[in-house]
Image 1: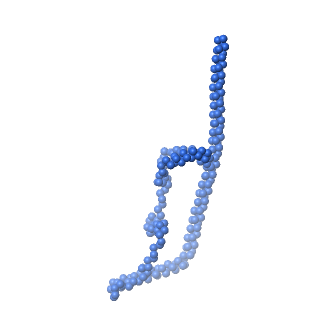
Image 2 (image 1 turned 90 degrees about the vertical axis):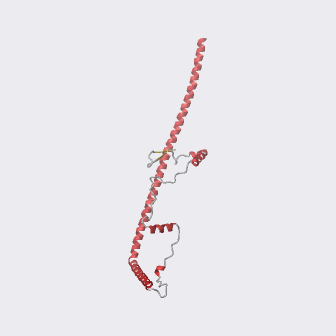
Image 3 (image 1 turned 90 degrees about the horizontal axis):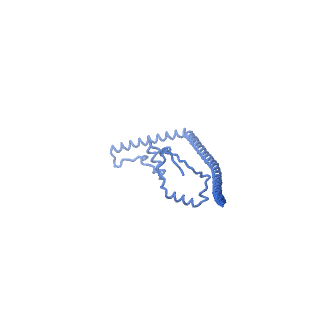
Length: 218
């Protein structure tokens, strides 16, 4: 049995059961069958998230290229083949080529040459500074992973301690409730015995009064 507060946002469920202590379902299998029937009749839970749960975070919202690459990886699709056309130096298709076609081929050759020069410069920079940068990046990633693992272990420890405290408190309260229930049963039984004794005494008093009246009439 549970009750909810009136606030739709800060809605808190208050349970009056002790799941770590109660074992009615194990003692009385018919109760378990009734619970399963009631659960089967209940409507399905809503598919929407709780209002307090933040919306899902969209990765690479401002970078469509990275977003497309992430979608490709999630879909387990292979990498697209490399575009080798841009590394070629095609000559004019017509023979002999026109001046405009040869100027276009020359511009393409200059672009390819500049691209290769930049690649050589980048490779030289990578060979000089890339190793240290890679080590620093690996160090940062390892530290981030260690912090995440530490936070996860702390959260697991807190969860374990919370469950342990909940179990201990429920066990303690359950023992008290059982003791009070036993005491209540004993008191109720004593009250019933007293009431039965009172009824017997009333009957005895009535019998004695009738006997006294009969003796007085004699």
